[in-house]
Length: 139
Image 1 (cartoon, one colour):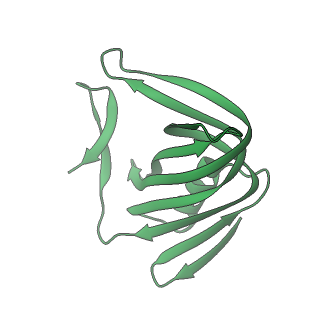
Image 2: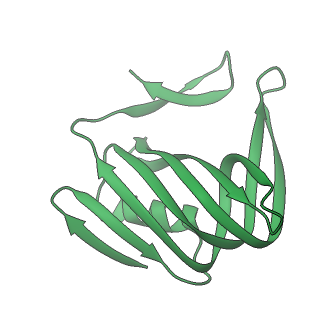
């Protein structure tokens, strides 16, 4: 992973074999990020995404393998109990250019991944909301 600071923001390049989620959590810790917006594109050969069922309060996960073109990563990085907390979604195309997407659990890079972490002024934490069974913005 290569990271370049530009003003308050970070430009990140992930390399073959690196996981997007693990890498961004590491960046959150190392740069002590309180609150940031995340965007990115790239290529992967293994992506695990989830879909949340509110009535069951459970995620269903699906793993995709193959030549996968990441068309969009978007989300945010905040903190919960002083630890980095990621909420990312991903859209990607398979070899037939059929699109898939969902909550990003894992994505292993097959070529490269380019991510911008735009730090935002202030702090926004997370709090568990029993009604929906999720950690939501504490605002």
